[in-house]
Image 1 (spheres, rainbow, N blue to C red):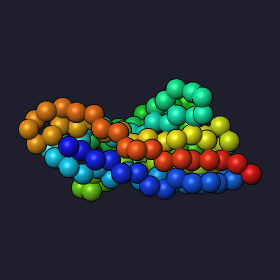
Image 2 (tube, helix red, strand yellow):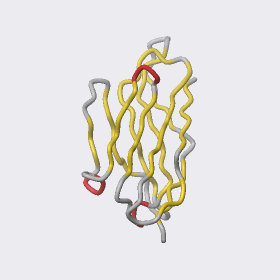
Image 3 (tube, rainbow, N blue to C red):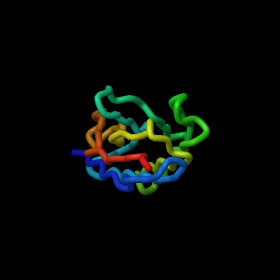
Length: 120
């Protein structure tokens, strides 16, 4: 099994910053893509950003220029630096990983979610 543990959520004022972290552990041979999704209240889950093993990144239009995703492959950890936060960024943020386990089976893992609230 693969576990993803997130940290770094919380309450922040508009214009503020937060940094989310997600560490993967378990029977992992290789992680191909790690990313962050979010689910605002009453809405569906959506992609925020992801990063592949070569460092290539992909961002949702709503966060381009404000959020930065990075990855420490040696630690199987992904980060999301969120700047210039807006009330509409309020959501539960979920870590995601597409991986291959030690038995060469592909899989998808999700973290438990961390709440980010942007409010004055």
